[in-house]
Image (cartoon, rainbow, N blue to C red; front, side, top):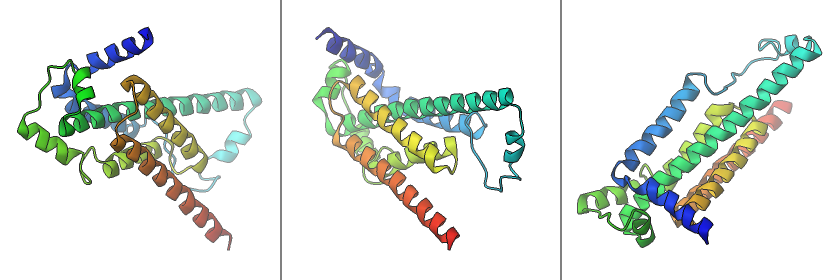
Length: 212
């Protein structure tokens, strides 16, 4: 029971400044993407193994190869951490917009019971969580998928790791929320997983075509 109360307290504190939440979460998303664009995340370009210097790494001594392998493992763990963090922040923004759009009582309780939504704010929130809105299923799922790809590049195995990290981020966000996330968030997870599935299918078709 105490754990549940602590969880609600932490979420209550987070939502206490609800008026600025949408802006801050969007800014956090943009900052995460900017870090990747500035090469703080790892991306890979197409090219032959020789062009990319992969053969030269094979000729290194064991200690150097081990150091590179350990760094690559550390980079991958950092990529997964970044994605899980983005998932949680993104869902916070989505749930906040959903609460404004639907007068969700549980959301109001977490916000301290004093938060009211004026007509203009509610109308904007309804637009934001709509089919083509910023916090809607389509755009939110696409942002999560695109960020995963920006972190690891066009690599199926690494994208599978990113998909698992994304799903873990959803679970962590659910735990922080204290109950099941709204349906819009569940639908977002399904839509994001579908994007990953379509990507794997495309890569398989591409591989098969190259072998013909």
